[in-house]
Structure formats: C-alpha cells, structure tokens
Length: 256
Image (cartoon, rainbow, N blue to C red; front, side, top):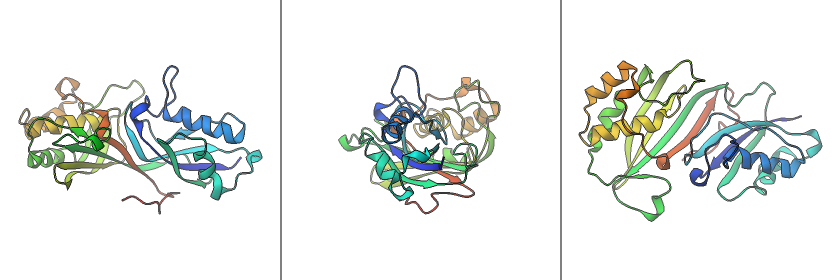
C-alpha cells in the first residue's frame, strides 16, 4: 500500500474537532468517508494533532495508506479525494512518502495563528474573536513575551489524562496588526498541550484589558496551577497554521 501524506485545510465551524467521535461529526470522519468512497475500503487517517470543536486548519498534515487496488496516480490523488469532500474541507496536496513517515510523531514544529478584531464584521465572525471591550495592543504584545522559551504549561492548558509532560519550547509568540483593528497572534513551538493556545490568548487578553498584569501571568506560568488560568479564548479565531518535519513532504507549499 502506498503511504501517503495529506495537507488538509478546513473550516472547523460545523465540526466537533478533528478526531473521530461516536456521536458527533468530525473532520477525520468526513475525510475517511471520502477516501472510502474513492477506494472502496475503510481507511484510517492519522493527523498531526487534534483540533477542538470550531478550530480551523490551514496546514493540518495527516497520513494514510492507500490500497494498491485504487490505481489513483499521485498527481490525481488530492483531486480525487476533493471530489468526495464537502466545500469546507479540502486536501491542498497529497504526496507519497516513505512508510516510516508519521504525521504526528515525526512533527518537529507546529504553528498556530489566532485572530482578534476590535469591531464586528460579518465576514470575520467565523474566523476571529470579536472583542467588544477596549484593549491595549501594547499590553497584548508584552504579555506574549512571557511565554517565549521552555516552560511547563500546566497552568495554561486543559487536563488531559494522556499527557505526561506539559513542557513545551515556544520559539515565537508575537502579535501583529494585519489590518486596521485586526490583530494576529502567531505562535511556534515544538509541541502544544491540550487547550494551550486558547488559554494563552485568553490570559493575554486579560492582561490587555488590565484585568491581570504581565508579572501575574509570569508567576501563574511558574506555579503550574490551573486555578490561575484565565477563561479560554473562543475557538473561532484559532487556526492550525503549519506543521513542519525534518523531511517535510510539503516544504514548498504556499503559506501566505
């Protein structure tokens, strides 16, 4: 069976996250159903990581073994899968890779983006946190610097019984104004723990609205105590932007 890597984008609004669930529709389930419709076999798609309900993906990477009997050439595989997908999920690229390639365990760096705007926009309601209270972009940026480096992110995460280690190395955490009244948080790390990005954004917004100080966030991070977290930011603004590998099958993919 050819081992295949997929580069997937999706609007997560109408899905209960990436991972297949018993009583809710997920991106993984829809993708696996599309593959079954074109290959005639039930296949398992393994993603680089889970995204929560309502979270979007632009650079989700997954792998799957394609049956030899499918006779779909590599160049036509993405097009074939897309023909059976709804308009809010799309395979951007597909590539045959070495059998040892694993989308989750071989990822060396992940990137997320989170968008915030200070006004209501019909066109951003699915893809940004529309914050009604005044906030300081300067304080937002100052708060982001707290999280750069290697830290235990227990405080700013959800409990996950499968997670034994909450330490992550954050290479970059920065805000930028991408257009008037719209800011984007870009964070790059070797790994992320459950709920981490939304928890960080919620905490940074608390600092930006003078509900917490930057020093308070720093102490909360060191405390490894979830009682010191802030409310999570909505899933709406979060996008899994990119996943990187040492031998990256999508190194030349377009990331604007």
